[in-house]
Length: 320
Image (cartoon, rainbow, N blue to C red; front, side, top):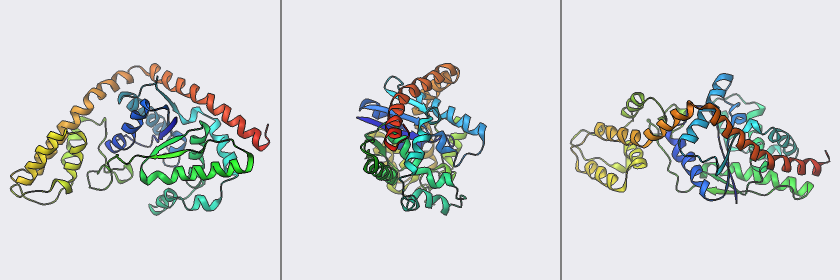
């Protein structure tokens, strides 16, 4: 089973990324032939600063390796190190209906947020399809809200295969049902676009201050509180043992405890969880040649499949 996943280097990774994408991706290392790419082509739709894109790409590489990515089990590479992806995108574009792209939620959501429309935003799903199909991926793990991305890829692959013969493996989405929706400091889903994130490897003092700013209700110190509706408790559960969760929930319901106490305990658990990874990240940052070698090795492995797939597609359409 070949598994593909990717993440954009469009800003500092946060704990929503960690629990929503990174941790599930790292678990896949044990389940099949895993490919993980840093989607720097995709990031061009939102990052217009060259140095920011370079730094963001490097930060993602450091973050994943620090969090446990094993380059012996996972082909880890930059999207831009597979130039075959761009040619395949053009071949796929010629069988992709306009209506299919116009129905994509991500495009409509970005327009609703006031992002100026351009071809990159509109054609984004075709590039995503090329990412998936270029390595003939069988499985693409996604959250339920991202299922449409894989469905579009399937539609494009089926249209190409119907027109030119069986070139592409039709991928299946693997819905990550167990992945929690991580609330941001304002209670909305944690997202860079909302500015409500808590960074994985942010400065500890700033991270603690960020945690202390999490929005709660106005209940007083002595009043009983509901852990099930509290943003602080929802974040606490991500790091705590079942026993720790039960203890804090009991103190919530008993009253006599302020939200500030819960926030401090959350900050301590978060720092304890990421402190070893932070130390590993510092080691990696001091050894850039190793990190670059990992990315190059991953790209070499992916390009073996990419070259073979592109040759089949070019031959199918008459370019070879």
